[in-house]
Image (cartoon, rainbow, N blue to C red):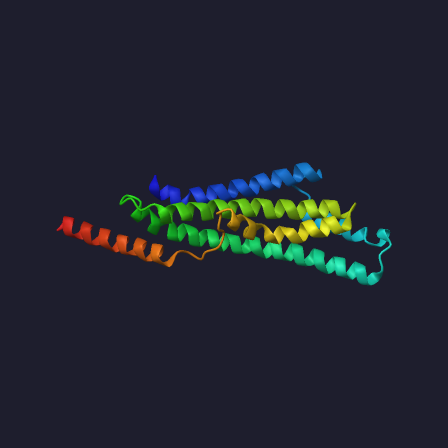
Length: 190
């Protein structure tokens, strides 16, 4: 059960967050799963730039901002997958200290996994909302798309850290606990 907690639970939670985000986005936009949601909405938003009577420089500026927001969220999602793998690898170290009563590291690990899944859900949802609003209100749409990249920072202020920077002392203590348990098991086996 403990092994599943740090190896299977984060993956299933991340899968749930992505599935919820996908179904939520398709419900809001009316696009089916076969349609490529973000690219279809991006193309629709870009084709409407000329209809707003914008000068070419403003149109290019809007395209650059939209591209920046979409690419930033895309690479953040790639990075999140790597962070999840690191969290799974480090989770076992925190499990060694739980039986001894030191649960601070494990609680912070759990918060990081939950924060990772929450930001994956919210970033993509806010980006899609910005693409949808862009057709009717360009500035609000651009603001939503650009604010999607700020979600990890905001989640961090509410105690859901999504980065891999950890407490060095907590990691050292968890590693020492693992070494001490190995020594104890060897002594018992002899």
